[in-house]
Length: 204
Image 1 (cartoon, rainbow, N blue to C red):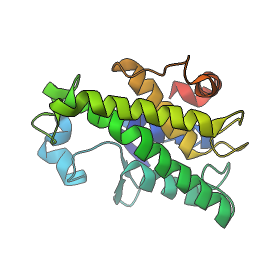
Image 2 (cartoon, rainbow, N blue to C red):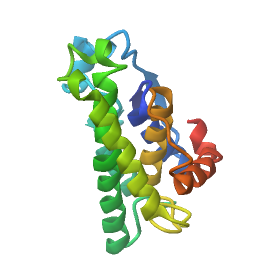
Image 3 (tube, rainbow, N blue to C red):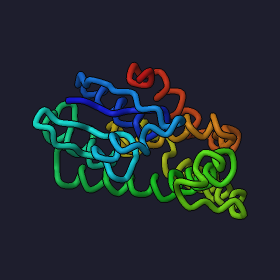
Image 4 (cartoon, helix red, strand yellow):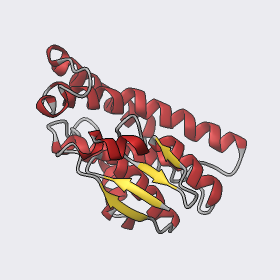
C-alpha cells in the first residue's frame, strides 16, 4: 500500500497509526506548500486535494484520516487502536469526535485565519476576523479534555486508541503555530503528552 503524505497533523496521524500497528507503507511525499496537491495529477487521485491518501494494490484509493485508519484496523486488527468489541469501538469513536470538535476544528480554523492565511486564503474559506476566538475555543477545548482525562493513562482509559494519536498530532501542530498547550492549566494533558511523545510512533 502507498500513502501519499505531507507535512501536517493529518498525514502524521496515519503514519503514527501504521507505526503503532507495525504496518509498512510506501510513503510518497506531496509538496502541499508548493501546491502539488492542487495539480491535476493529484486531484485525479483525490478530488478534494487533501492529504493523506491511501492507494491500495488494486489502484483504489481512500482519503480522509478516519476512513484510512478504519480500513487499516479492519485488515490489521492487532494491536487494536479502535477496539475489539462493539462498546470499545463506540467509545473510541465518541472520543475521536469529541477531540475533533473541541480541539481539531477550532485549532485548524484559527491557524488558517491567522498564521496560515496566505497559504490557505485561495484554497478554503478563512475567517481572519474570528482568528482569536477560534484559538480561544481550541484552548477551552483542551482544558475540558484535561478535566476528562484526569489521571487516566489514555483518553479511553488504559487502552491506546486513535483518539490519542489524533490529539497528540494536533497538540504537536498547535505548538508549531502559536497554539501550544498551557501546561500550567492542563497538567493532565501535559503528563499525557510527554508519555505519548516517548512512543516510537511519535517519530513518524
